Structure formats: structure tokens, C-alpha cells
Amino acid sequence: MRFTHAILRVPGQHFAQGLSSAGEGPPDLERALEQHAAYADALRACGLQVEVLPADLDHPDSCFVEDPAIVTEAGALLTRPGAPSRLGEVVTLRPVLERYVGSVSSIEAPGLLDGGDVCDLGGRFLIGLSGRTNAEGAGQLSRWLEARGYQAETVDLADHPRLLHLKTGISAIDEGRVVTVPGFPAARLLDGMERIEVEAGEEYAANCIRVNDRVLVPAGYPRLTERLEGLGYQTLPLPMSEFRRMDGGLSCLSLRLSLRPG
Ligand code: CIR
Image (cartoon, rainbow, N blue to C red; front, side, top):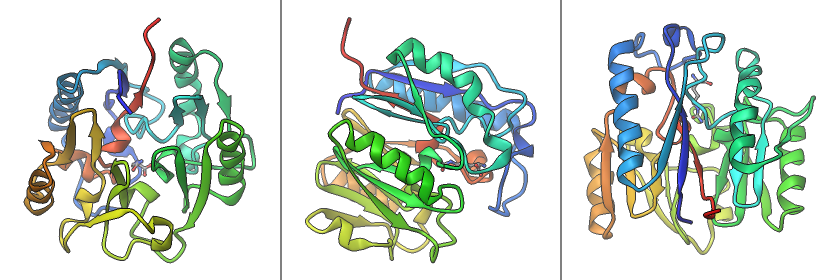
């Protein structure tokens, strides 16, 4: 899929008050803003028009804009984020998404769903059942996807506490090719796909994103970067230390859209 647009939200003054289990100390806001600006530039270098939304000062985790929405070529859906402090992020996002795609559906209570739990393998979606996404939320999304001609399958992450979200452990980088952490759950769902498993110590890099002709990877994980380059990908390493401190990976910093002209 060729992406044409991306929506980002800049981290706010209270970024350090967001949720975190990383145990790596508080983020430095100035550095986070620099890293965020470099991320936006990288998406522009991939040919995308990038809209950077102003900080949402009521929601310290709102720069992780992937979690409150799902965007497909067949439309968009606002989620119902599983962390109580993030539930309100959808309010200011709705009018933004509507500008791009028209009317937008939503996950309804008691469903809970974070976009980080949704991995598009090319029209076939894996939905993680995590601490943030419950069976009701996954069921609502599955029905929404199936009504639009997509397939959906769930992956239970209950025994994988180190995976905050499904996409903490898997990234689709090509048709039939994924990057995963070692021991990715429900590996049978990946039968027939080529799996690039990151090495021990590089688990954070399993969250990388294919954007048109490049693969954006977190900087500092040379073995995965070399392997991707060896396979012919042009990688774009990006410093992510301050987002990592807040449990955030590359994918969660943007909503990527593929819009037809006109
Ligand atoms: C949170 O715990 O919700 C944020 N601090 C990090 C969210 C990261 N989102 C993602 O991986 N999709």
C-alpha cells in the first residue's frame, strides 16, 4: 500500500506524566520534540503529507496517535482506548479524521481497543487481546473489518506480559513478510509468511514501519537494520529513546493514510 498522508500529534508539556512501565527514567521533553520532528521529516522524505496536530494537554499519551484510531483504505474507526487516562483522546481526533475520510465509525462500550493491537498483514488483520484490548472491542472491530471485505483473527497476548500491544511484537513490512520478536504468540497465524525474527536485545526494533520505499527503524539496533538492508530495503533509522521511555514505538507515533487523489 502506498501511503499519502500521516497524522501526528506533538507531545505536550506533561508528556512525562503518561503511562510507562519501561523503568528507564522520565523522558526529556526537548529531546522528545526533536525526535518527533525528525520522525515527521522522515515521513515527508517517504513522500507523505504530514499534519502535526497541536498537543492535547488533557492527555499526556496523546502523541501515540495510533492507539485511538484504525485507518484502512475502506474507512476509519475511532477506538475506545483501554487505559482510562486515554479514553478521551478520541474526542479531538474525530473531526481531524473526518476531514480526511468523511464519516468515522467507533468502538462502543463495553468494547476496549488500542490501535497498537491491530496489525494489517495486507487485508488480513491480526487483533491482539491485551491489557488494552478486550474480546468485545476485538469483536466489534472484526465485524467492522469483515463488513468491508477484510479478514480478522485474534491473538491472545495474556501469556506475553512484555508485549504492551500486538505491534510491540510484530510489524508487517511486505506482502508475506513480517518482523517479529522471538517467541511471537500464535505463530501458526503466520504460516506461509517469511518471518524475520529480531535477535535477543533488539526486541524494541520489532516495531518498525514500512512506509512506501523505506523501512523506518529505531536507531541503535544494528543487527535488524543490517538484515533489512541485506534484503534490499532502504532503512531510515530514527532516534526513539524518549518515546521508548514511555513504552512507545515507531508505529504508534502516526496514523498513516492511503488516500486517492480528489
Ligand atoms: C501507553 O501506555 O498507552 C503509552 N505510554 C504508550 C503507547 C504506545 N502505543 C503503541 O505502542 N501503539
